[in-house]
Amino acid sequence: MTGHSIAATPARAGTDADSTALWPWLALLALAVALYFFGLGSFYAPTNGDEMVYIHIARLTAEAGHWLPLVSDLGTMRNTKPPLLFWQALVVGDWGAHWTLFALRLPSVVYTLLTAAAVAWFTQRLRSNWRTGVLAAVLYLAFFSSFRYGRVYLTSAPETFWLALPMWALLWSQLRHPNQASGTWTPSWLARPGAWSALPVLLWFGLLGLSMGLGLLYKSFALVAPAAATLWCALLAGQPLRLRHVLRTTAAVAWSAALALGVFALWFALDPDPAAVWQEFVLGENAGKMAPSQGYWRAALWGDYPIWTQLLAYLENAGLLWFVVMGLAWAGAKALCNGKRWRHIPAPERTLWLWLLVWLVIFSIPSQRSARYVIPAMPALAVLLALHWERVARVWFVLTVAITSTATVLLGRIAWVMGAMDIGAPSLRWAAMLAVALGLAAALAACLRRDWSRNATLLACLCVYASFGLMVAPLDSAQAQYHPAALAQLQGKRVAVPNGFTGQYERFHFLMPHSTLEPFDVAGRNTGALHPEMPPAERLTFLLASFDAVVWLDDDSQATEPSCAPACTVLGYRWHVKSRHKSGEVTLANVWYPQQWLLGREWLLLPGAAQ
Image (cartoon, rainbow, N blue to C red; front, side, top):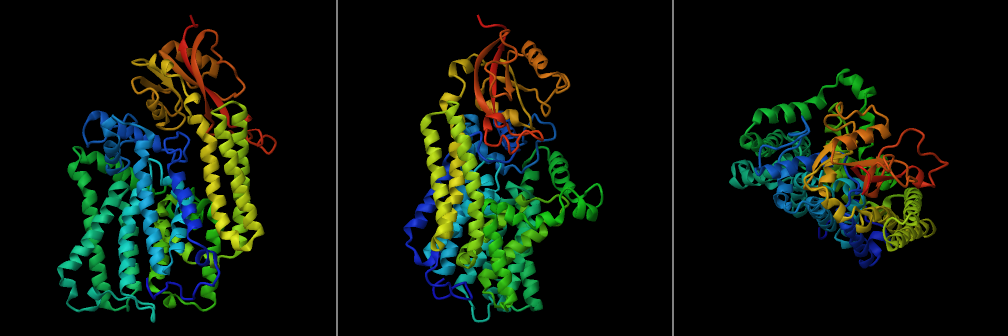
């Protein structure tokens, strides 16, 4: 914003964001963007545990050859998300012709990068400085919520993008019509007595409603509450509190909300079985979260999702930047205590704070609470953090690099052990060591050089993501997979595969697309008939007698052959990462030896001895 800085007090001269050259920040942004594409097709990318459930629904719907109704083999797990998420998969996967994890996840990355671009552009406009804008984009991409839920198929990226557009539109209006002297902003259509009847007003808020509706059609109609409430509060906060302003603002936002719900209602209009949508999605997936069995207030205070945990939602979503966000909150509290009252905060910054506050308050109301629910407000946090970057005390950055250093060393140790076990190419191990060295060097620089603390902390955070990606890369390499000739033998065969968690067997469809897969673990189908109570060795013998082939997980990384040998044929094996550990499996005594608690073998077996 030319001539109108957002900060009520100007940034100190010589700060990291304002005094350094632009190219280091661009290099940091390029690294962050590259990390979002690196390992995008990996089975070990950080993700939500339900991702494979929704890929399963998308695949069966594609095989059915129609947009609706959605199709699933998982009982009640069918209409648990609106159709836009699945339609996106049908398009990018070409109705099953190009069904790869990379293709299915790519739209999520595109949405995330578009949001990061908006964060950068508006921050630049607010501060009139591209370095601060690029910093905001890097911060948004460095948040763990963005990295985990902004680059996989079951994602928060689409609704974050679409639900943010009304707020970006409001910020743009505030930038064009500022009134920094009073800290207020009165839209012209609210100020003029006859302006409400103007067609452009209906069109403008209609477009905002369409944007909201697309966000709802990706996730849930319930998101209209925080989206509309945030817009309403931000509009009223920027103008004198008069009855006609309240009524006009309420009418305008109500029009946007109604149109958004109308877009969502297209699901009911287009689905051949709207009753199932109502029962499974509206009542099962949404209404159930408002009705705890032990009573609302008892659950809110002492239940599985107490209100106090929701107060940590933004810190949790920040991930490795937890302490930096705490530093922002501390700096904000100090400013208010020192007399910087709310009405003196410029309108754009006030809008950003309201964005965070309203989402947090509304998602503290349902009986089921989660930090994921406020992810659509994380762009506002990135902008605010960038604007006040130099005011966050250095101690918060030192605490942050202490955490990143610990994580980097542990990831480096795992990568080194995997290399020693000949998992993947040696070049991947050395690449991981390079990322570890860079991360530790950045952490050291943050501790030794005051003027490097902030920049180096971001680099250290990104190096943790790089170290993780390089650590799991050997598991996805061609030499670590089953031989194509072995997989070719399974075409048209019935293969028993592990499941472990609802829908997780879907990942084997990427390896054996022409086989009939039957999950046999506790969360699979026909669990009683497949005898989960049997001892592992006996159960493997039973499965081999019941199916044409079996994929069997052995948690003993030292085992050189499966328990069924030599009475079975080993087509191959690959390493798998144990996702769940029993109490006492990981201790301080063995944490340095990941081969004891992290890795196991996955055997591909045929019944009968090898000929």
